[in-house]
Each structure stands twice: as C-alpha cells, then as structure tokens.
Length: 265
Image 1 (tube, one colour):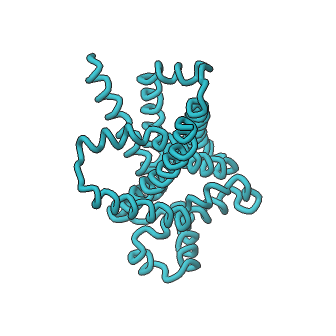
Image 2: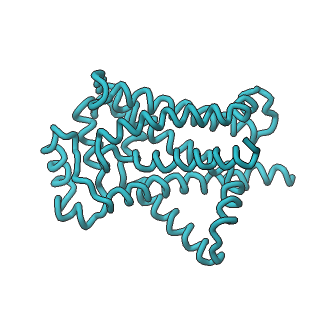
C-alpha cells in the first residue's frame, strides 16, 4: 500500500467514525437496537483506527513532549481515548437489547463520558484546525464571505444546542446521580434528547416541556422511543457536528492566542 493510499484509507476511516458518532448522539433517533449494534461497530472501527495510527500514538505517548502545545496534545489525546473507551464499555454494561447486564447505575457515567468524548473530539479537531481546513478547502471551494457566514451560523447553532439539548445534562450526570439514578434518570435525560429536534413536529406531539416529559414517561416500555423521522436524524447529526465545531473553534482561538503568541514573543 502506497503512502497516498494509506492516507486516503485513514481519512476515510476518520470520516466513517465521525459519521457514525453523529448518528449515535441520541440513542432513540433511529432505534435503541441501532444504537447498541452500531456502537459495537464503532468499537471495532476505533480499534482499527488506533492500529492504523499506532506509530503516531506511540510517538504521542513516548514521553518526549517538550513544548506546551505537545503536552496539551498529549493530555487531549489521552482524555479522548479514555473517554471513548468508557463510552463503549459502559454502553455494553447498560445495554438493554444485546446484553443481559443492564447496570443502570452506570447510566450517568455513560452519558458523561459521551459528552466528554464529544468535547475532546472537538478539541482534537481544533488542535488540527489548519490541517483539516486545508484538506477541506482543496475539495470544497466557497467564497470567503459565504464560508464566514456559514461558520457563524454553525457556531451559533452549536451554542444554542449546548444549552437546549441533553448535552448539558450529560455533563453534570455523575454529579446529580443521587437525584437522577437508574431508570428515572434515564427517562429524564431521554425527555431532553429529542427536544429541539424539529420543534414544529415535537410541538404537535407535546405543546410544552411538561407534556414532552409525560409523553416520554408514558413510553417507558420503549425507553422514550420516538417514531423514526429523517428530519430528526438530520437534526441530531447537525447538533453533534455543530457542538464539535464549537469546541474546535474555541480550541483553535485559544491556541492562536496562547501558543502562537508565545512563539512570537
């Protein structure tokens, strides 16, 4: 395999990982069975990804990091790998379809690690901002004004969804576990997983937030499962990508202000 083919394969694998992660952001947007089965596929692809990048991983964790940026990269990548591993392991342990474990007490950890994994993935992209934009820019050419407006829209939507989606609840899940334990906590989180997804459609089903919670709790047997909707799926994917982009942009801004400024000093 040539170097060019190897690079293309790694990029293709990265794109597959990202696309899959986006569809798993809400466990019920397609189905709970899809969430669990594809979650296992994601685990396999994650292992393949690490194997393909084993030289880079070895170099990153070699302990030869001297600059502030390289040390920050080491911490980010360590947390990135750890968070995704926790997501996948706890996903198996809280499974309701594929495995008989159903350790509901681990739900808060599963939600929290999913939020942390998304944050660390965004930071990871932010640290490689110029590389990814350079790669995308060669394939998608947009006028600068259009690109700037598009970025602003994505950032605004990402900020909005950080506040209105279940992401915020995931972040504090382990710290509120005494209040949101087991099935009760899961139902409460499920109640916010679908909020904001096609507001017009959800409004017709539940005119207010309390109605939405009642609708979800009334479907306990299906764990908050909603009928599949392509619009909801696209909205979920857009939410995941916009939150990732938000943290990537913040990271890139901090990097430019801190590390590059130090380099010029």
